[in-house]
Each structure stands twice: as C-alpha cells, then as structure tokens.
Image 1 (cartoon, rainbow, N blue to C red):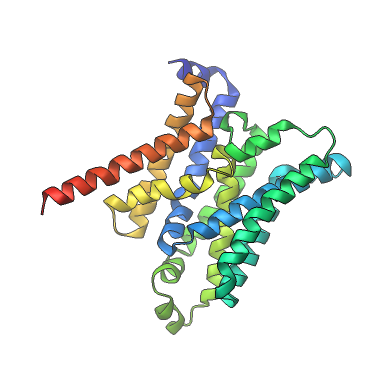
Image 2 (image 1 turned 45 degrees about the horizontal axis):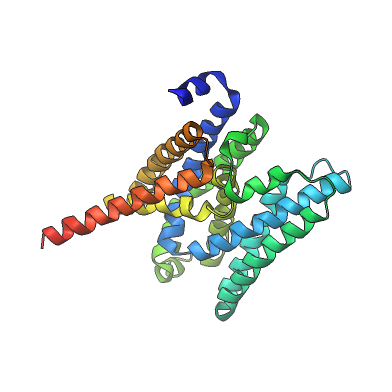
Amino acid sequence: MEFLTAFTESELVRNGVIACVLASLACGVVGSYVVARRITYIAGGIAHCVFGGLGAACYLQKVHGLQWAEPFRGAVVASLAAAIIIGWVSLKAKQWEDTIIGAMWAIGMAVGVLFIAATPGYSQDLFSYLFGNVAMVSRHDLWLVAGLDLGVLILGLGFYRRFLLVCFDEEFAISRGLNVEAYYLLLLCLVALTVVVLVSVVGIVLVIALLTLPVAIGGVFAKKLWKVMLIGTILSMLLTSSGFAISYELDIPSGATIIVLTGAVYLAVITTKAIVCRGNR
C-alpha cells in the first residue's frame, strides 16, 4: 500500500515503474535472441564496457566542460564500440574470442574507475550504475531509454525472420544469400543498446540476469521464438515492477531485489518442471 501511495504522489516512483516497463520490452525481444544464439558471455563483455563509457563521459563533462558528454550517451558509445569489436573478433578470429571478451570485460571496468578517479568532485551516484537504482531515473533519462527502446524494438522485430535464421540455421541463411556476418553484428549492436537500457534498472553487474532469466522462463512454456519473446516481456514487466515495489517497501537496493526475485521464480519454474517430468516417466 505504501508503494501504491508513493506511485500516485511521487514522480520518481512513477518514472521507475515506467523504466521497468520500457526496459522489459527490449529485454523480452533481444534477450530471446541472446539465449537462442547462446551469446550471453558476449553480452556480459559488452555490459562491463559500459562503465568505461560512463566514466569517460563524466570526465569529459566535468573536466573539459563538454556538456553533451552525458554519462548515458557515453554508455551508448562504449557499448556499441564493444559490440563491434567483439563481434568482429568472433567472426574473424574465433580462437581469440574468449580472450578478447575477457580482456574487454576487465579493461572496460578499469577504464571507468580510472576516469572517475581523475574527475574532481565526481558524483558517487555514478557507481549506482553498477547495481542499479531505478528510483533515481529522471524524466530526461526516461526519454533516452524510450528512444533506445523504440529503436531496438523496430530493428529487433523488423528483422525477426533474418535474426531467426542467424540464431538457428546459419548454413541455410548463407544458402539463401543472407549476409550472416552483417546481421550478426547488427544483433550485437541491439544487444549493446538493450544493455544500456537495462543498466538504468538493475545496473551493469546484474544486467545479464535480467537479459536472460525472463526469456529462459518463457522457453519452458513455449518453443516458438515469438512466443518466448511475448512471455519473457510480460514476465520481465511483472518481475521488475514487483521487485521495485518490494525494494521500496523494505528500503533495500532495487536492482538486487529484482534479480533475486527473478532468480527465485526461474529456479521454482525449472524445479517444478523437473518434478513433473520425472513424475510422468
């Protein structure tokens, strides 16, 4: 009841709920591709490079007075750059894929910390991007999230059949004349933008869980990818909003609460499925 009262009276709480809904749209669509293609580790590398972009943007804005260098924009640039680099290495030098992802995972975080340390009077709130604080999403951030969300949805759904082939049957896609490499890089760029959207809700450290767990639950109840997307999106909306409400009521970190709730539901679903399957044998 306290959360419902706050929702009607507080703009920050309303913004937080809207951010959860917007993030869930991108999460359900792109997360389904991530799970189907099995590129969770690539998404993790992209996510941790975001912190480098946040730190660099903060440094340029406060030290050099570049007002356009907002942290959110820095996150977008860093995530897209990481997606292209990792994707190119994955396509051209498969044997170095794990190494480059691990290197960028660590370097991205380290660069962010160094830039923040070099920024006089930096805001401690920048570290909230690590674990998320959906209650601090401003109306300006909300418009940025909505813009990214719209772009991700248009591309993610518009190229559905092509991405479906890239995820499940590359050889058939090539035989049909599809430029698999180009669509694979585009998919990674969509993953990068989705990561930026989700960072505002659960933070960099926890973003992979929200990107994969709701659609993994959806995969238990559906086999067709579009159905997994639909179920994953609805579940993500329910879980993120519920987690936000619980964290508000108990005055605990929102990002961690959302992930614990999502993880608990996932474990409950797969455990129930295992018991049912064993009982039917």
